[in-house]
Image 1 (cartoon, rainbow, N blue to C red):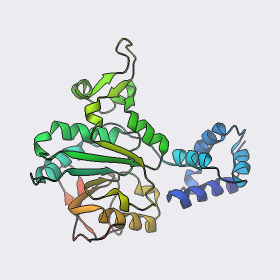
Image 2 (image 1 turned 90 degrees about the vertical axis):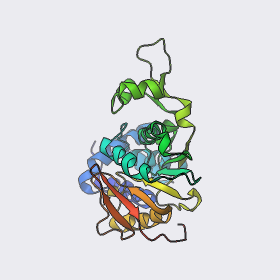
Image 3 (image 1 turned 180 degrees about the vertical axis):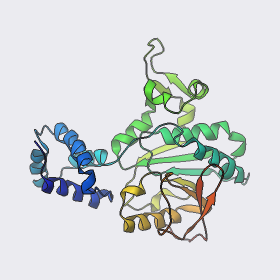
Image 4 (image 1 turned 90 degrees about the horizontal axis):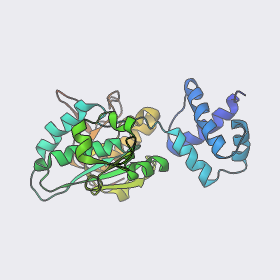
Length: 280
């Protein structure tokens, strides 16, 4: 049974208010498919039945499920390889032995491939990070954060972006006796990563300052006003001259004057201009 437009608009508005993610009518077919998953989880026969359930009060569990389905968690290891080359050639090359930990925040870590790709890069380029590094991995989806923290991936997932050499060095078989066993991230790759839930509409004040923030393929789902507000707060979480990285199809044009564009042979990076003393 086709879901009514009014019901889809209701859920779209809930997601917009809670996450800032905007579902246009052109994308309602995608929203309808994802809402079908939530309906099944709540033993509802249809999305309309889920809607009636929600009208009686959004339970924390149901709201969490909406968060999980609202975000697009499509990702893979070393997504946009040229970007990781640019991080190595430009950002890591600037690091100096001044006693300061190199701090990184993945603001939409999804299922963890991005942060483990970063950790593999940093471990492979340890000489450029004499003071070590730390990675904060956050996502609004509890399911995504939990999956990322376990660091377990199947054969198909590790084949997307990982070379045999990296797989052998940084992963082990969960059950070595089973050819089709999943792969587990080695403990030494996880030791410098901290995981937590974080809504981009919530305050970043308690997160601290970072030398590098990655917020890739997230702002495209926000309204222009929300993009500007989030970018302003991301800027205030950067150390002086820290870097922000967006998705390959995203841009700061018309959204923020707080960064200068650094166009390398490999990718586009954004470096913070005159830092403010406040946090947001």
